[in-house]
Image 1 (cartoon, one colour):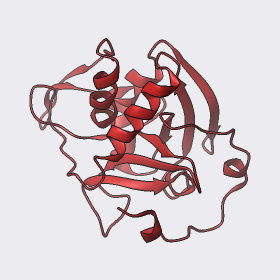
Image 2 (image 1 turned 90 degrees about the vertical axis):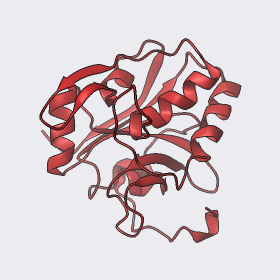
Image 3 (image 1 turned 90 degrees about the horizontal axis):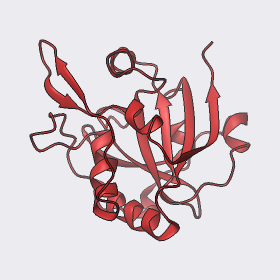
Image 4 (image 1 turned 180 degrees about the vertical axis):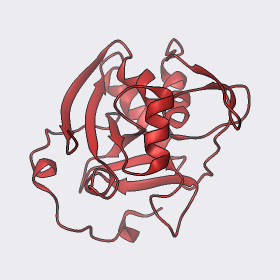
Length: 188
């Protein structure tokens, strides 16, 4: 996807204007406002229901993430979204940015390039033992290419529709060796 195809976004809220500088490879968490997001948060635990990665910082910060419904014209795929859109209140009731310090700067660049290369690929919500590509596995698979020891905690689910091990944003939020750069919540 060419950067020129991205449309200008609506005005930025005050918290976004005060964000610290981000780098390629930083993780961006959010808690979405939808029923599906609340379910993911409840089942997976933790404060967030979705995660993406900064894959470009200039001319604007861009986040690559696998989603079902952020863009009705491009459902069920890996998207490239401006950071301002990713954390906009239409998509985020809360958000945070963390840097995976267990990766060096070059590794973070390589990981972000691998994640960005997935833009346009289909969203696949499947357990660990099947081909999958959803928000957390998009990042985890790319990170493991640069850091084979990356092993976030998967959760076993035995629900009517979901059986097997799944990876939730909480596993990233609790992973050792990250530094929290920013946290914001519009929910109490």
